[in-house]
Length: 109
Length: 113
Image (cartoon, rainbow over all chains, first blue to last red; front, side, top):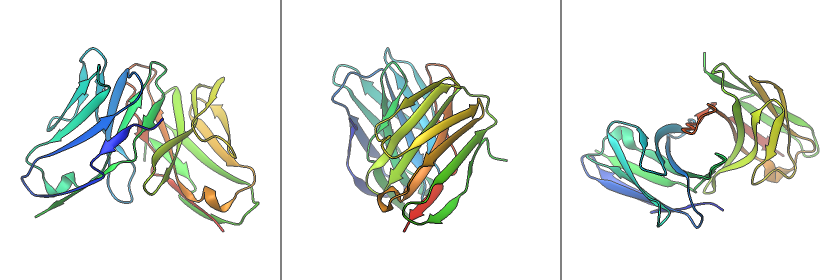
């Protein structure tokens, strides 16, 4: 079952902040975040593991609430290069990722 | 050269034809995946393989088959293509570790008329 992402789309001005949420109806072992620019392949941003370990991008942060089965991606002081579609992927212990439908982020000058 | 290479990048075919999409990787990863992307639906898992002898169905495997010819090669076949299989297909790989970062190929755009 796909995780639910919100919002579906967001428009920012350069320098503004944004939060993208991801929630699942099942227990999670890991949450992954990817960004896809138009016409390109998704690119890894961050992974959050059960137990608190994180690995990923220097300028983007995220949280993982294991009890609520939710994760949030925090984009601060957004840059034009942050534009794209953001996907969360949720994983169980067998490492099969299920992706959400995506959040389209547009950053304008 | 890309670490994960997909061929063909674009293909137009007719209903009922057999189509094969190929994926090869130079990252040395054991795990390989095929995803399908449709506008507004995100990425959906078709098949995945944890090694040459281990192949598993994903969420939407009906109408597709796969072959893992070697550690570096994973092919997706549509035995008899139909129009609703028109989509962008991505191959991905990951290490055999719990971190599991996915590395995607550039995608294969398939149009079935």
